[in-house]
Length: 500
Image (tube, rainbow, N blue to C red):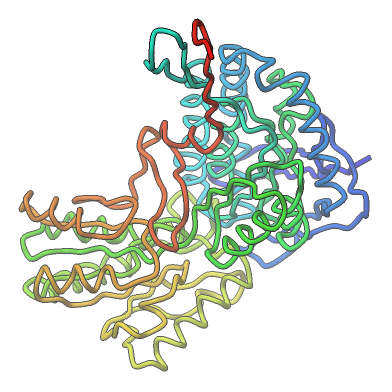
């Protein structure tokens, strides 16, 4: 029988006690892993272990996949009308709302993000996503297609079956809802692996699944490492689709495993090195504020972070002065302090990775204009950092840092900046700041990215698709477009008079 974890929070932002089981959630119950083993969950604000969760492996994924397959055949999928699936999802959203403060506290504890962000952005967003797709559940439809008077021809959008989902650590509950909700709405069953770094809120979510009324086996959540549980999801023959959010390197491995196993469908939301293009005629005050939000939101641990900031030469100095002033004013500290904007980076590994990029930038000749150092002696805090004098071939310009590190680059002409902005293997998002609407739309269309923001940055809308070009991924999350990831289209030909 799996043990439980109880945490009493007595902080300025949240006071309360949360208790969660620490096992694997398979077929409607918490269970111990077949092979045993645990994973430590660390508080990145202190570097100390909070608790240890059960570690699932290939054997547990196999059990979960079989449970999901059985549920799909007997108690979910096309056995349950869309309107009923939607009602259960709406109930789940209500339960998530009732426990939102607990979700936010667990995410702030394990991830290090500011509690106010975890509450007001991540978990509010997760609930909204669940509600949005609950509304879609009874609207999955095909088409009647005219052919001739002796044939009835139509299409059905059928659930794929068992889908595997692997989510990241940077926005734990939002990522979970982003994957789970469209899969449920379309009638699929799920085997999901949360990040081993931030699994606590997913375990709390598991306690709500039965309360909402879902049959056993519809949603299975298996903690574990990517190299074991994640790999097993990618390879399992009963899992016919895998959805992943994370690094491009891991995305390639998942794609390879999916191809070698049963050629399962793959959607990938991967890395980014998003350009933020600011022209001379931009509203400077707003451009600075949005640039701060674009790179430093969520500690820079954001796939669409505007980490390459291109500023036209006419306002470069003024922009840099104001941008520096606002970056210096960012409150870095305790995630449970009400005025904290930036907490620690999520782990020691991520902290060391970011510091390695900062050292690389210095060694390559870029100038640390601001920051570049650890904050304090405890935990994984890094100063908001600004690099200037950056060259296109530098690692800090070309590779995703996933931290609070901005490269500010001067440009002269529109053609020049479009070429520089597109000189990357990534293509997730981009921002353009200008008062010239013709130029705004022209440049937004020219930038090779799945999302283009004009006079704003890092703004998601549930009704708008999100995903990347090039090595930033395949497929789309959010909006009606995400439903396409979770259905197979069947063409049905009915003979009503043809004779051979």
